[in-house]
Length: 345
Image (cartoon, rainbow, N blue to C red; front, side):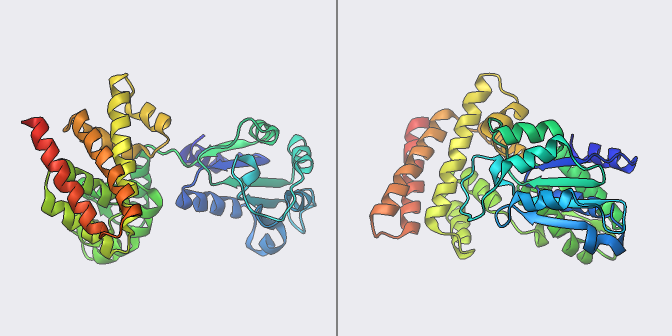
């Protein structure tokens, strides 16, 4: 189920013994955590809430807490964070994890305990026995895979709760500038509300003036200026990224990644993939796919391929010569423009 479905179910008083919270949306993860904490009265929280980070402590300690009787209360809440052993992820830790204890608990969870496992990962390793056992025993809440409409709804609800409104164009611009990242958008709201306190309406001018551009948005703008063969604007954006302390080699790597995405989207679209299918197949944020689909409509395969290859060559030069990264990027833009002009001519 998603966050909204969980909230509706929870508000009706339905509480299951084990929950798996899957996804890396920090804002929603905190919302879910707060909802569970509210299950335990204030005066009992120090005694009946336990939180365990699996990269630092054994899951057996969490299980031992979970099977304990609540101390002067009706419920215990046991929170398990970063359960890396559910993934294929390699983690440096001296803690030995006993999966037998965990599996045993999942077969017979304590009635007076609510165990909540926060897994901030894109996916789990479904081949593992413990993952299979957990998915069978737990109610899974997916917070990582949100559609654009769901993100907008959550942001608007939060704004309305504060007694404010937001114009549609301002909301679209927020999505664009933050790369559609819910946690980032929520983090921008306090200053937007403070700035628009008199009108109680968040408009596009305040969004443009106050919301920080994400690295992804700057790169998206840079990709489009390169493809439009606008050398001056490309270099302006590039220098802005440098001034924001982004390393040239990292900027180039993100550009390569973005052009690879554009090529993948273009090819898969020709094979009948929709926006939702593309996001799932390529394992990228749905909003990035939406922007990529908008871009590939304006350009052809040869342009995207030439830019991609040119950036790979630029990366090799950055790693093998002492020439200025800014000069190498400028040379890439000029070469691309020259080649693109020949192709179109």
